[in-house]
Amino acid sequence: MKRLLALTLAVMLILSLAACGGAASSAAPASAAPVASTPAPAESTPAPESTAPTAEAPVRVAALEGAYGAELWNEVGAAFTAATGIEVEVTIDKNIEDVIRPGINAGDFPDVVHLATGREAGMTETFIKDMGLEPLDDVLGLTIPGESTTVQDKILPGFLDSNLTMPYSDGATYLLPMFYTNAGLFYNAGLFAEKDWEVPMTWPEMWALAETASADGISLFCYPTPGYYDSLMFSLLNVVGGPEYFQSAMRYEESAWSGETADKLYAIIGELSANTERTVPANGNDENYLKNQQLILDNAALFMPNGDWVVGEMADAPRAEGFEWGFTAVPALEEGGDRYAVTWMEQCWMPAGATNKEAGKQFMAFLYSDEAAAIFGSHNAVQPVQAAIDALSDERKPFYDIYSEGAKPALGGWAATTPIEGLTTYDVWFQPINSLVSGDKTMDDYKADILAASVRLNEALL
Image (cartoon, rainbow, N blue to C red; front, side, top):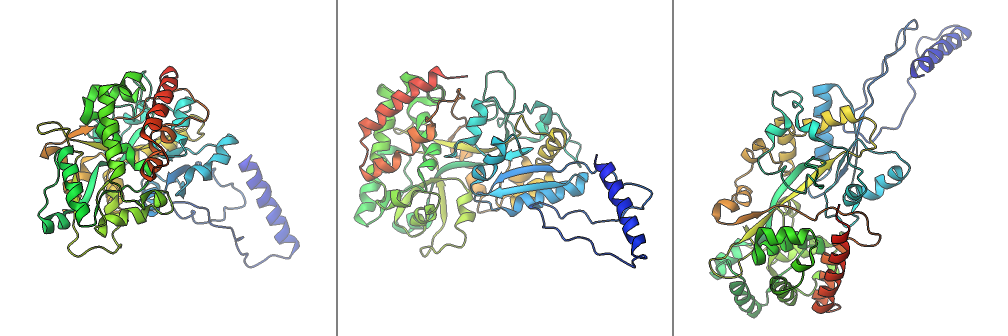
C-alpha cells in the first residue's frame, strides 16, 4: 500500500508540473519533528520511474526520565541507529506511565519500556500480573550489535537470578536488568570527621548516635519519598531474619509479617519514625523530594536511604562546608551480626503486544554494548556490565565496594500475584511511612494493614 501510494503521488506530481509548464524546483513540505532519539533521515526525491523502498519501522522506546535525565536515551538511540541503520523513536517523561497509558489502553504498545518495579503507579507490576510481558530469553542469546559477545555473557553474575528478572516460577526471563546501584544509607562523611563520630555498625549504636546528634539540633534520619523505604525495608528484613526470611516476606507469607522476628522489624521502623526530621512528610512526594535530600547536605539530618544517583542529582545543590558523600550498609541487630545493602535494579522489558519485536530486541541487546555503557556512564547511570564498573569515578567507586567491606547483598523483590483491584505493595508497606512519622497512623494500625494485605496477596500468588 505504501509503495502504491508513493507511486500514485509521484504520477500526480509529474502531471501537476506538466500542467504548470514545468517548475525549476519545489520546496519540501514542512513537518513537525518527532520526539526521537535520532534526526529524521534526509529526504530524497526518487526518480519518477521507481518507488522508494519501504523503510523498516522504527523501534519505539518509552523510558522513565529519572535522576539520570533524558538525554542519555537520545544518545543511545542515535548510537544504535548508527550501528544498525534502524531508527529509534523515544518517548521520555518523569511520569511516563501517564504518557503511554492511553495508547496502551487502545492496544498501541511501545516496543521497549524502561520502567522499574516499585513505582507508585505500578504499571510494570500490572503487566507482570496480567502476563503481559514478552519472554526475553532469546535476547540473552543475541550477539550484541557491533560486538562478538552475547548479552548473557556480558551481564555480571547474579543479576539474572532473582524475581526482579524472572517474576514467575517458569524459569524464564521477562525483564532485563538495566541500571543498578547498591542502595544503602547516605550521610555527610565530612560532618562525621568534624564531630569525631563513628558510623554505627549496629542499631543500638544508631540509637545512641541519635541522642548525641539531637543535642546538636540534628535529626537522625530522613527519606526523599516513602517509596525510598523499599531498599531500607528489604535490607532490614535480611538484617532481622536472614535471606530465607526475606524471601518468605517477599511471598507475603503471614508468618513473615507477624511474630517475634517481624516485631524486630516494626520496632526499628517505629524508632526511625520517631527520629525522622519532622518536615520530611510534607515534602515526601515527587514534586518536593529534593528538599528532603537537601537535609543531608545542610546537616539537618544524618542518614538517608538512597541510591548513588543522588550524587549527580544533588551535584549543583548548596552544601555545608566540608561536605563529602559517605555511604554505609544498614546496621546489624547487634555486634557480630550481618549488615546488608540492597542491590537496587531498574528493569527494561517488552510488552507482549509490541509489534516491532525483532528490531526491539536488537535494541535491547545493544543496551549492553560497551558503547552504550559509556553513554549511560557519562550520565551517571551504571549497568551490570564490567565496562560500566571500570569507568566509575573515584567518588562513586566506594558505593560499589561496600560488599568487599563486610556488608552482604540483598537482591530480590515482591513476588508476582494476580491483580487485586485497589491493592498495591506501595500503598500498604511504604506510603503509610509519612503517616507514621507525622503521627497520623499508629504502628498497630500499620501492622494490621500489612497482615490483612499479605493474606490476600499470598492467596493471589502466580
